[in-house]
Length: 393
Image (cartoon, rainbow, N blue to C red; front, top):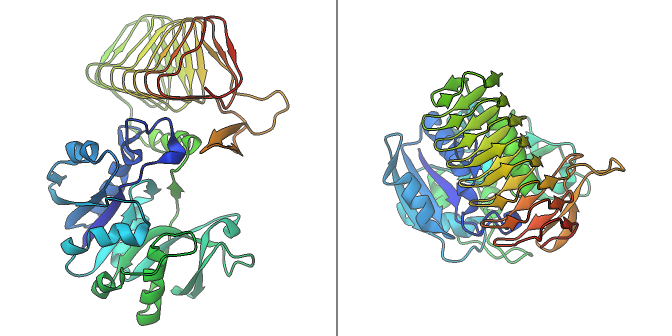
C-alpha cells in the first residue's frame, strides 16, 4: 500500500516555533512529529511513502532521505497550500493502485493505522466530546454513509480523524471544486468513495491533531510516556534519576541534579549542577540547563539554554533561545481559569490550567525577567533586565 504523508503546511498556528522549522519537523519525544506518522504507516505495511512537502521542504528531505526504515520515499511538492485534496493531487503522478493518506501533523495509535490498511477502503474516526467542532462520520454499523462538517446536530460523536485508505479509482477524483473556505477538500473525495464503495469506519483508540503550541506539549506528554528507561550518557554519581528517563549518548547530567521521568535528554544536552528536571520534559540536542534551574513539563528545542537560577514550567522554547539568569516563567493564573494565549492574532483559551510561555528561535531574556502565563515571544525578541512581560513581544 502506497502511503501519502501530508507535510507541506506552514504551521502558522504554531508560530513562532515554525519560523525556522516546518511543523511536521517539530520535536515530539525522540523524533520529529511527522516521523511518528511514518512509523505508523511502515508498521502497518506501507510499501512506499510519498511525502508531500512545501514550506521548508529541504528540512523534510534532509531528515528522511531516499528511504525510511527500508521503505522507499518519493517527494511531491505542493507549491501553494490550497487544501488536502490539492496536496494529495500533488502526489497523483506517484500513485498506482489503492493508497492511504495520513496527516504528517497528526498522531495516531499504530494499531488503528494497521486496521485502516486492513479495512480499505476506510476512514479513521475518533470519539470526541464535542462533535460540533469537527467533521463527523455518519455510519450504518461499520459502514460510512456520509461526512458532515461541523454539524449543529451531529449524527454521531465519531470525528473524522483525517486518515484515509482510498481505492485506486480515487486518484481520478482529486480534482474537486473549492469549498466555502476556498480550499480543495479531501472530504469531497471521501464522499465520492462513500457513494461508490462500502467504506469502513475504523475507530481509533487515540488520536491527536497537533496544530497549536499547547498541543505540541500534549503530544510530547503522550510520546515521552512511551519511552523505555535508558542511560547511555554521562550521569554524575551524585545525580538522581527517577522513573522512566532516557539520557542519550553524548548527554551529560552533572552533580546534584534530579531528573524525574518521563524525560528525555538528547545527545549533546547537559543539565546542572543542582538542577531539577521533571514532568514530561524534552531537552533537545545541545540544549543546556544550568545551575539551580527547575524545568517542568516543557520542551526545549535544539540549542535552547536556561543557564542559571530560573524556573520554566509548561513551556516551549524554540531553537537557540537563551533565558537570562533568574528568568521566571509563571504558568498559573491566580483565578484558576485556563490560561489564554495568542494564535494567529486572536486570544484563545488553551484549556490548560497550567501553561507557561512560547519563545521563538534566538529570543533572549534579560536577567531577572518575569514572564506571565500565555506570553509569546517572537523569534529574536528580547527583554530588559528585571522586566515583567505581560504582553506578547
